[in-house]
Figure 1: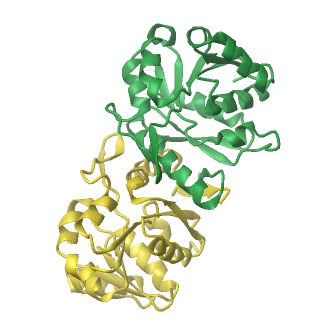
Figure 2: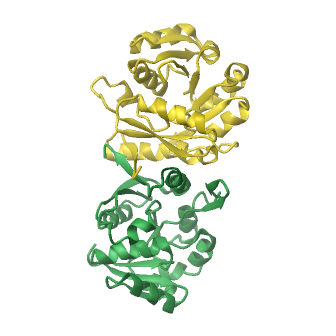
Length: 214
Length: 214
């Protein structure tokens, strides 16, 4: 891991910023991406630990592993604008297509099957992996939380790419990357975030998953 | 729990028989259901612990809590044939709509949204709860396994019914029932069984879920 640079598209959002913070704390070179280089730089400064900021396009072109942490709304359009920059790269999609109403969160249907499959359809020359769906931004950002009690399910059809992303998950203290199946089974992992939100509400928790017997 | 009788439709299958065994071992009155009363009786004898057998129709009419553990194929038709018997009862759907090919398991689409929502649509007068999707039949049946390392996600729109089913899960040593959201978020919990199968394959495990911080 130590030689690789990690870019985070949409890294000014809670999930992206939390991941950026933990990766930077682990000593990785981290670049936060945003439409505005200025906002990306501000987000990088706010988390410290040596992260820097750049435009999403610069991040996509310049980093070895690119994490997609944008809202589902702008997901497809952003990736369509970066197909050239992302060719050949490991693209880690952690987008959860969810909507909310009075009864809480629920999963949105995705024509391609899942956000990750949408990314794979838009980026045929990239190595798309799905992961980091259930991380709690609150825990990732909390200086009092040294270890995050969570298994990250890592899905994809490219063994070397999923192994790399599992190793990336492992750099966050407490977190373990666990292979979770092929990309065609990504929808339920993304959608399960709605259930985690229901659990958090009911139990006043920051719930995470652990896989037993592994 | 102690006064309640538990019926298991399709209780001659692996998942149903495993649950029947654990509930009977916990001292609950358990009746295994099958199309054939004879086969139901044989399954009950094979697990011992005082379980008995009856036809699916007798089980539906006679038990307080009725677990649906049939293959997805016959799910809708069976429930349509038992609407009268199941009226007013807690019906616990643990059906996983999955298919298999060379690449492993994958989730089937369900017109009603999920097997549990299909049950709720067919049984408007029952109290449908979704639970027990990820139990390992192997572990439930293994006499060497005293405790099963698993949280059972319990989903439903009827608070009293989900609380009852959480308590039912709790009678299996090691297992904990955790509220997992409304019925509209059941699809991803059912479908996640495909991922658990992928995990079992990759890691040669009988994987289960635990929810952290709860």
